[in-house]
Image (cartoon, rainbow, N blue to C red; front, top):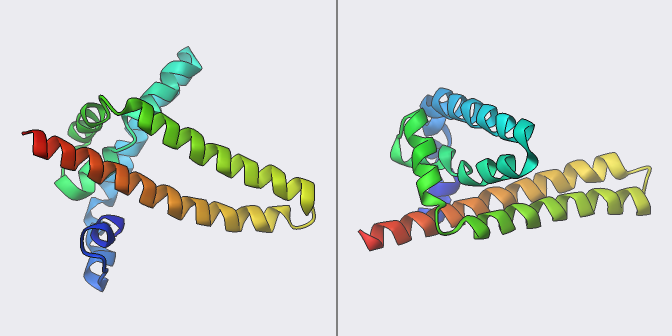
Length: 147
């Protein structure tokens, strides 16, 4: 849906339910990616962060390009080559904002921290999705223009 809003500026009921058939592929790709990332984290934090960054676009390739699970991971790995630091910075900023809001809530309004952190989580999640949609479109547009 975020890809349709980015491309057309609108959304329809059809686009709301059209990705349902891709749920299994997205779920399996994410399980595989998380499994690989967990191995990276077990080995060391740095490889885990590297793999999170490299596989961050796998779901987008499944949804927009109808790529297979392994193919989407390969495409994501290739697409983030050359822009790795941009993606890492985006991860760091989004994580920093989320953690910052959480601790700010604990300091200022400890009684409401849970409720406010849920609201902020939703808002940050929406910003996160559209930020990565923008980065995905930027990377794939640049790749297509080079070909």
